[in-house]
Image (cartoon, rainbow, N blue to C red; front, side, top):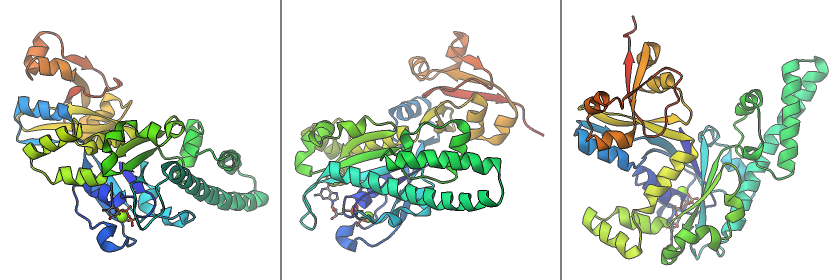
Length: 359
Ligand SMILES: Nc1nc2c(ncn2[C@@H]2O[C@H](COP(=O)(O)OP(=O)(O)OP(=O)(O)O)[C@@H](O)[C@H]2O)c(=O)[nH]1
Ligand SMILES: [Mg+2]
């Protein structure tokens, strides 16, 4: 699953990209904001994985990940810059909003920037819909086709929503409509995380960012989150060794680097949860969409396991930790549940799949 970084030029996208992925791509301070595209992989910090790894001491520990793509900033009106394949097929958008002073740009105005970006997303989708409606009309004039009639009705409805400045993520769709809409990769349909990049001197204000920047109404919308980070501070934190890092965080009154929270929030925005597999070889977090059936979860590990699926042995994370990582102990106490293929796996469950080796 992929998250696309969007925002105005010099809002801190590439700085944040580097923090999320551990890359060291030059930021526009050095590059003058060249139209580049960066892709990377972000690891989702998870204290549960750390704990399980401490219990099992496996050869390998694997965290959940997602992909991140960083595109060049766009000014208001430059929405064509959003029509990039990597953004189109992203599952969610991460909008970096500048709230720090930059002598090369106007005073920060987070709400305005949020509304301006939403407008660009709406207009980009409107252009796509208008083009498609024109073609549909021509085609339907030649010959009536039920599928196209339904598509037209849907697009007319979506167009009306966009014209009323409603992002498509707020328009309820049934399964068939959602399937049709998916093909258009509408930008305003993607869940969005507006992350306010606060001034390093205002970091104490971070927790109150929603009120300070009057983003409460935005945060209340469906498929929308608002968060904060100080990219410059985070870059400093990332550059410190463990002990110094703890001291610096304590000075700032932070329990952990803000970027860890941002990573977890991005993961949640993608609608993903994790289940764990444990053993001497590997402790691993497996990302799955919330609501995934046990058989499909098994398929995340290996398609053969899904095909030959018999049962899932499921333990709660807390129970396993309380049993010091002993599955045998849980089994003996009847606390290892046997679940069938339609069981919906919940976040944090530890699964072991029983399966027939396929021939
Ligand atoms: N003071 C301050 N400066 C920041 C912060 N985050 C980024 N910057 C600076 O802002 C400038 C732009 O940062 P980038 O991360 O390159 O911004 P960008 O959004 O990727 O810019 P484009 O790719 O040109 O659209 C750089 O000089 C950064 O060092 C911040 O939190 N505070
Ligand atoms: Mg950049």
